[in-house]
Image (cartoon, rainbow, N blue to C red; front, side, top):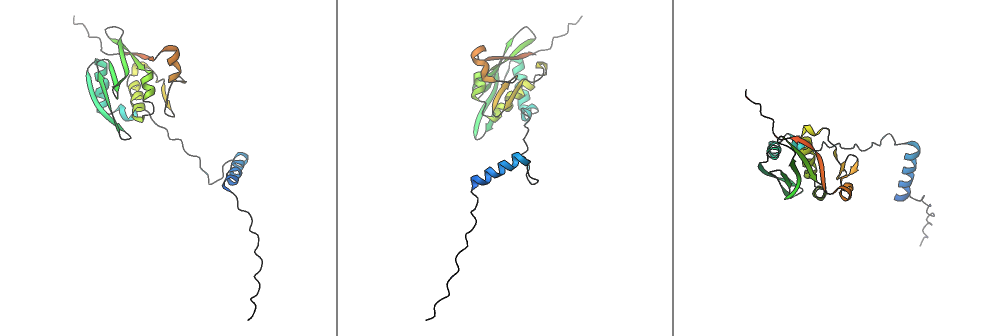
Length: 187
């Protein structure tokens, strides 16, 4: 039998880059030279907090009932869970808990207050974050909106909402609003 020709020795393949090495190399290049032409930075999605509620007829009826101390209720579904939103007298409830309430100052004005501990309880719920900012935005006499949402956390004037609970308590005065227009005297 004829001997088969000997196979040539295999060439050593260059070592392939591991995922960690590749990531380290790309990070180095990005820091030294900036992003490549094909890379696009992720566009930050700007959310207009409260906008879904501001023009909705049920929300407008809820705010009107809250201003005048009447009752109104509707429900909201968020990620498979249903929450009841209601106004009863001077209280605005979300999921059965009083989140906003008003205290009368005089015959025509009331103060809008927020229960911080209840707001913190629901801050992970997106529909509540929209509702809270819509309530504050629906009172133009309160001035610029000082309540913000960032990374599913509430902020009040650049400070986390929970930061003031220990020093000031759970009640947060948002501002004063007119609940009834003064009636003109006939004369």
